[in-house]
Length: 412
Image (cartoon, rainbow, N blue to C red; front, side, top):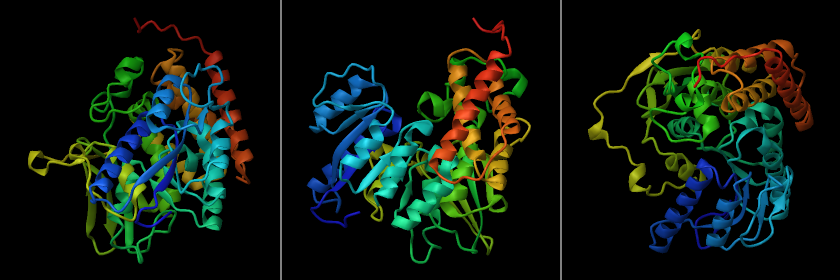
């Protein structure tokens, strides 16, 4: 990645039309405005965009940025903007291989972004990692390639960005992931809001509708991540990702519910001190930290935390009976191999089915657990092995759904 100066950091943005993608473009414009005023040592040049199916927004972004290097995953989406996007499931990967860049922002949702992210790593390009499924599904493959190529994986999730910043004072010298947290770090704790149903029992929400599950109390996110927050699968995936990013086993990883979503992560040191990362519920902060590293640059005013407005910070343990996804994540960390790919694919398939009103909310984590029990993990040799486990898990979920008739009696 270039150092400060007039040479821009060239960005490829994968998932440009999603929540993280649009906020990344906000950050780019903000930092470039600061650069023009002499207040930032960095400026950005977005050189390519990839989207899934939102062709209209991709066209607007391409027109605004004057771009012609584009990709659309959905071959049937009608595109009327500048240029002619590469199309199809391999379009994002081809874009990464064809366009020179310094940093690839991996913000595609789900396992679909894996080939493009691995291509970026193999080409020696640093990655701002907003797609947690990358490491959950194929962590050892990605890390091996990153270490061989000297690639840094800058975490964009607020929790992992918080861990990284909290550990900055104990890393010698300051490093970017992947890394091995030193022995002076006794434990890292990720925080969770608890999602839309944090104050209700599992029985009360078993038949919950997508509309209810999408009503997150603190964050504005895409549909899939919001559902994952309600099941706490999102935190399960983040626990696995933290294992890979910071070299931590289950004995050094914890989860707490932090209702206000103000404390994003904690690092407990060997001497008993605890370093907490606090920040506003605004994803532009961790995005900017990843894009501008190792520099610290003024944030949007809206991304600042007003400490004077805080009246309390509440913490609570996670009830494993209420949120079984956390134990499933710990199982993946212990077992390794393709178990992460199986968990992630089962969750994606179950969430899709829930959003299509094919299963009740409470069935999501049941299907994940059933799939992990049914499919034996194998050693993770390469990306193809992970993707085959992904395929088998999705197939198993579909078979389970097809075998059970759900009356939907509780839904309007």
